[in-house]
Length: 294
Image (cartoon, rainbow, N blue to C red):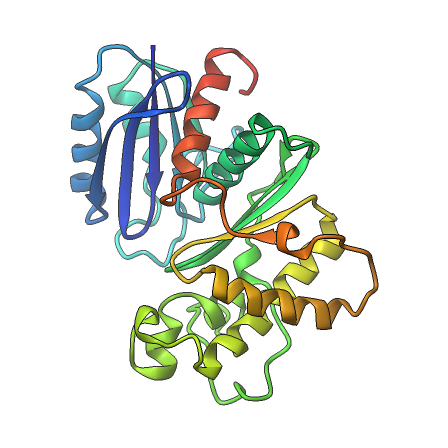
């Protein structure tokens, strides 16, 4: 029995097939071009596997997750050109008569980290996963369940207190300008400095500014949900950057509540190579087969 995963990002689709131990047996990375071209290549990949038993799709968004909506399974109004109002799930249901799970890319990642931590012996029932890359988003698990009823969380679009050295930067979110995503996502490096993030030395003050914003997001998350752990992943994040985030977080928290091990509480992913979403998708596909999720 094989399990399928699609981690659908605005830059690339990572398609994978794995076993019930959630090990990747085969995979394909597809550039995210037009919906028709990208879907076609993904469908061709999965059609190679006759024993595919279930598929989980974790997609960039916003997406419609309400099953009673006529747009369930759609990518809705997204900044990604050409992808608004695409019936993502419907396209794959037409091609494959197997159970399918539909969720956000960050929900896939948070579930992967949650299952991996539990399988590794960690005792936790709550976890938040932020990704900071081309965009910013977060998935939340509380008491073993995803958070989100009328829609999925949009924690990349919360408003923040501006850093005093960053007041001249408008932010780049097309909807809110200086929300979290508009201030710390990967493309902000070019907007601020005219260079890509990987070219910016960690000694550059822009990292301190961004750490201040990310620390505010961690503070809001901590005081709102009180999770056992917050994980930050994505192309912008490194351990060096998180050291700055922890420093700013400690100043903002100011001892209000006791967090015993900050290095464990705010950390990088446990799964290597940005594999959290693929692992999570395998686990969700497996749970579908076992009727543990719907």
